[in-house]
Length: 358
Image (cartoon, rainbow, N blue to C red; front, side, top):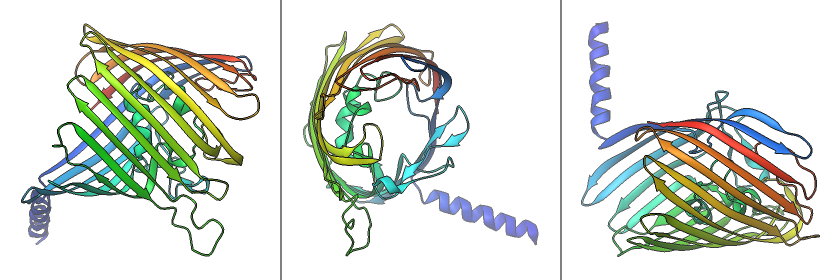
């Protein structure tokens, strides 16, 4: 009897699996030795995500026929240097940070319906305003080389991802044009001063053809202390011997740089990056210069130069090294890899790591 029940369970599981066109387990494990030096303190540690963000994910697609498909994507950030998970934000507000080091699908948790008309996607996802900062950064906003237009940004919890979102993506057959629009909710009760906190929208449109790619994005997120806004434009040209890329950003926010904690008063910020990727044999040289300044007392400004090399041992495994130095002025105190530097001080950081994807 028990054997019959087990056989029925196996057959049921096989039937459920066959309903999916594909289900994939995927991930990245990236470990890096990090060193940061500052005028106040320095730090050496084993970290993660120096080249690509460490993650564990599951995704699947079902063919519905007639050009339609349904899919899901669950992706969790992991800190493989200590075995913990990465926190998520449940409501796009400073109060929504949660996770406690357990595994959360903080990177992406979406369900989608797609067809010749495009894709409708719901859940937690990258915000449109983030894409230009990472796509047009030679370091992909990972590790010590990450562009200062993200490290110093003042726009708060939705600067990279948004929870409770509904998004639409244009179909991929528009002659090189692409785009998306996203609406997200803070999910607060009505009749309170903060009922609109965490609610917002973002949009991005671009054009890619051959070696050329350019895109522009804009967003607004509501908060009682003042609305955050992001606007940026980025582009890339692939010359074969090297890829040149750049982006420019203008922001308005009421958040401390690099945090989800609201401060008093709105500030304007602006910054830019220029960078390059140069293939060399089985590897690639990466270099960038970025800066960001906030429109507040003293005009705090941080300027960073980063240089790195990636050596691909295979399609899935790579060794990498990155060095960066940030210089502060006007009261800025940005530091690298856990170091602490004084007002208007400088900081130097290094990454040496290995990345394996599956």
